[in-house]
Length: 126
Image 1 (cartoon, one colour):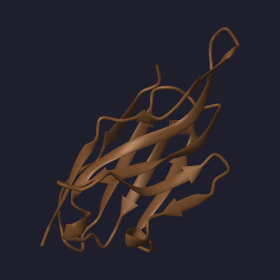
Image 2 (cartoon, rainbow, N blue to C red):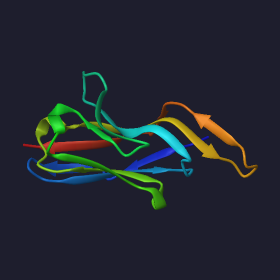
Image 3 (cartoon, rainbow, N blue to C red):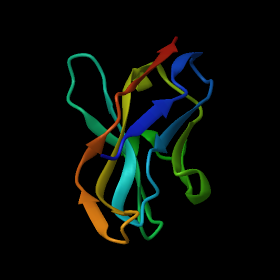
């Protein structure tokens, strides 16, 4: 089973920065999308940013120009750099990987869909 582990959340003042990391337990042979969602209290989970297997990126309008998603293949990690943070960015941030293919030791491939991390709390104070 592939696991995603988030880190880097915490408390920051408005205007400050945080960087979230999402470490995958396996090396992805391929994937459709790998990114970040967030859920604030009383609200639905929403897409924040994602990167495709081809390297394209997608951002929510509310974070464009402030947040940057990137991937380090060698470290099996996706990052979310968050700058100019606002109180409305306060939420639990979840890492998600969709339609992931990994190579096994038996030289076969396994596919996993819709993998979620456990979430990391981000709080922005005004």
